[in-house]
Length: 485
Image (cartoon, rainbow, N blue to C red; front, side, top):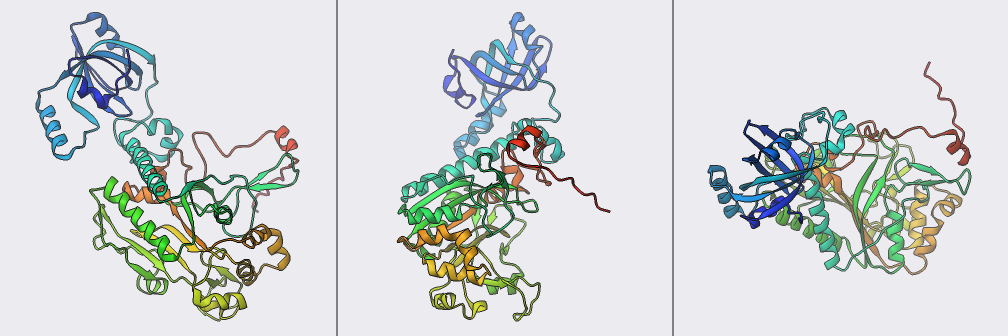
């Protein structure tokens, strides 16, 4: 018999059906047995009575066994059913537990048995030891809270894809194996077997590739990009994470900010109607004002920080392009110049000549913008340097020699010199956005298979050692780690 999803059972009242899923709860009451079954769409109650041969099988079922359940859909007329019907009529939203029908069970097929889970899957695991949860992530993901987190992550991603598609963006993939360049955090590197003693780098972001797509005439690009950075971890960071990355040709700061603001408002209004955006349009706060008033450049401007459904978006703008690497508040401090965003940004138009001439470096304001939400930076972008001479000047200010500029960025300079339009873009920290929207405390709660606080995957036991044969194949030799004295 064809499978029926639990969410659709109310359309089959009085009919014989088959559902497939998990035993959620089993209750043996002697001459009767009650069960809660679940599949990816919901939960429903089932009951066995008056069928000794079926009851005999039912008494052996245990939670988390995978079963096919055959039965007849019966309407329920008890208090729970009436309350459920009222909720559906008033809100249009069905409960995860389908309470207006139940299954009169006529037969079972046991598809797979299960060992007793190491934690209770019928409850939220938010208070369960995280290492145990990550070790058994496939169990953790069965809980209603984690299922909801994953479903909403999908819903938000789909809405973004649909919106960007309607606005002329192409979803294009960029390489995972790329070149290591000195422009950000530490790279994860991958040895090449075919080019001994040479290495790929895993991308910290698709920054260069998306600009090269603008050189290619694609005009509007996006992707949900996997990014890897070998940096110290915290609750809103992971060694690998997801960005919603996009780039637009012939676009100003205003064009990019308005489009992103419209998309964020659409996400909240359509998928999180219970939440309220504090201010529309989003306020724009100059970097200097944010630092003076809030002490940081990702301020939490909520009027009521105890309201989990209040969303206070704001843009931070007018960033200084460069800052000194020396740890000093003295503007005359010695030290090298570094960038505050990324080296491929452009300055405000009135400062472009200073960029070209390398003058008044500390006063140059970048054409960059960050989007913040409830005290977190959830995205950042800029208008890019599309003139190769401007980019070369920026890299020179950052201390790169002409030789190193050609070695590390020659491909970018050549591409920009091929007739590249003005362009700009932004990248959202998609995991961080989902964490806030789902009222979670860490991004690990909205990632299917995250790493722990030490950057390890307890389930797969990664990272791990590799064999001598693999090392030899890659022309690698491990040095002995010196123990601290």
